[in-house]
Length: 328
Ligand code: UFG
Image 1 (cartoon, helix red, strand yellow):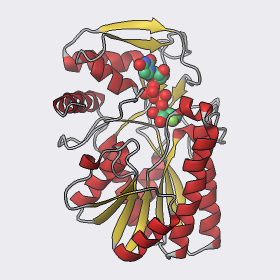
Image 2: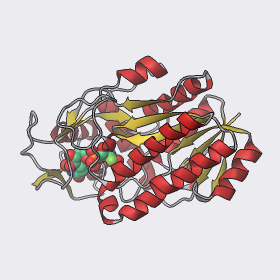
Image 3: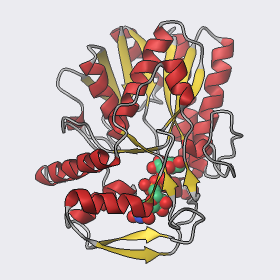
Image 4: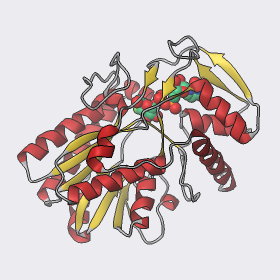
């Protein structure tokens, strides 16, 4: 039995590959290296450079590797970019995902784990969000992912096929063993930018808005450590192989930190009191996004072990130093 990981040369998919290999699973990766890196795929794991929407390539891979489960991470993930290029997002995140699901059904691959996102909730008006909170995505990114959730739901009804869609909240940190972390050059993520600023790669950083209705006026998010998230996928894989019914689960810790609180932790852990400017609000930022994530614990048996912002920040700092040594 082999697991096909699409996007396995990227940030979250790469951590999933490590978790699978650590668990003794056989893995094959399809990644077009548009944002991922071949060196992120560990030795002994076959990397096929290509598109997950290429039906011939996927069909051949499923047939020749004895694949019993697909973990689908490959996607475009930048919200502002999705507003400028909605059709590109629908092509990649929705249309190509349809092709991938069809390949799975044709090849009788019965288990599918999908990287969904808290962006499917959009402006909900109530926090924390549960899996039954009404969905109102406000970006093409969130909509493109939600449409794939719907295709999976319909496919699972029609065919011998089951899935788990995991809705990620704010993924952060790096492999505790230092093998991998967030590498994207264009990352806009708060903790990565904080780490880069603490290490002097940026002269200063900005807080986008301090007039939100939160405890200190800055936005609140539920930051989840990336290895904990990868382990939720391992639990989903076990659940599906044991015959579990298709489901959707939030992946977060159920509590949030504000932008100011995160920056204070970065300063404390790095020991650097870097410059922070107050800037206007960033368009599209909701004040608070926090998960209720009991379902992943109850249904999948997920037990997160790394709910510690100081450790998450320390991992991010460590990874930024390693990237610098790699010349990235
Ligand atoms: N922020 C700053 N300064 C920065 C960077 C970010 O103040 O330099 C703020 C943002 O305005 C936001 C918070 O920090 O309030 C978190 O921002 P991130 O960019 O780290 O994360 P987002 O919550 O915007 O995005 C996350 C995921 C996306 C996902 C989105 C929607 O990273 O992939 O949630 O759920 F699409």
